[in-house]
Image (cartoon, rainbow, N blue to C red; front, side):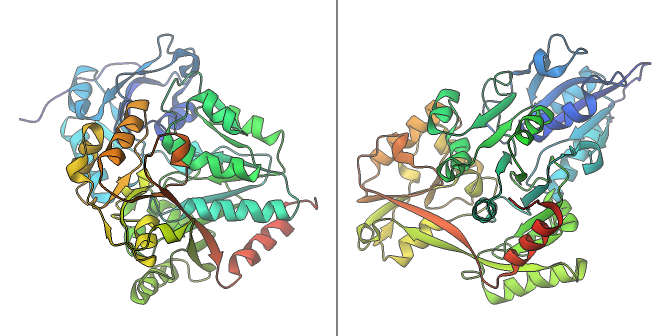
Length: 451
């Protein structure tokens, strides 16, 4: 029997579906201090430990003196009926189009309407020129591309600030505006492993990185010290800032995903230029498929052919050894990749074997492998809270391997005690044809004053 609901006079009652990032930004941009809406709650998924908290009153505005509760996504139907929800707003990223419509069907079958908020409603307008680097999927090579562009801007003498897509997994009120310029800043903030993976490379480059919850305030602060802002997008979300140059990464290892995932396809359709990464390791027919998809949509848009060069510290330790591999968490989990740079490094340097970690897993790491059955030999660096970091340490101690390959962007040896030799793996973007330089020179001539 289809449930029935009775409407009432007054503001539209809204439920926001999220994962601790885009959902909060959408609330701040559209619903905060807006008397036409009453947000009855957020739902949370993807990231452990978000549900059960509250969006704090200090961020929620005058209409929500007690803040706003955050519920598990599994409770959506009961929330719709119990709180007389009129609209469910879908507000997270890196999900298939099929999954979005499953969630829509849940809302519609329970009686509510289902909606998505677009760029015009949710993008902030900066006074400072903005380059946005986004992607069609998690793990496409967005971070190496962003870091390459920042280095290029630095070498040209431009003052750069990086704004990162949010990862507010702790005290939301304390994380309203965050600026990281040193490893001490990271330690003082108690950031997660996932945050360190994104922030540490910029700190090593001497570039401040901003993140948090209230992006209007973050942008205002960042503009005070930068001549150009780079938006380093998260997952496959579209930017929180209106870009003057929108670069979108497409992964030829996953051809067709640019047309099958939300909101990656939004980026794919909005892009000013495209970066095809990993072309050195992707099959030629898959590269061509992606090129054809781009040209069918935007035949005049420039396409950057790029590769990710893998660098290995102490590669001699890998040859002939049994290894464990720790890889980038989001890339391996909801990014859908079964392997990353660590596996390529192990094969390139003739490891004897990559040990299957599953017999040695416990706790949340074991749950992660159950939740993402495509995972194989690489262990995702799941460090959303200290207990998960300890679990990773224990798993690596139990595994009877000769070497641990650390293929995360963070230096794990700073965070855990690994009682085996560690080989660090990194990857850098390489612009194969000089197209990215040409695009940036054009942007510089149009938007940036001479340093």
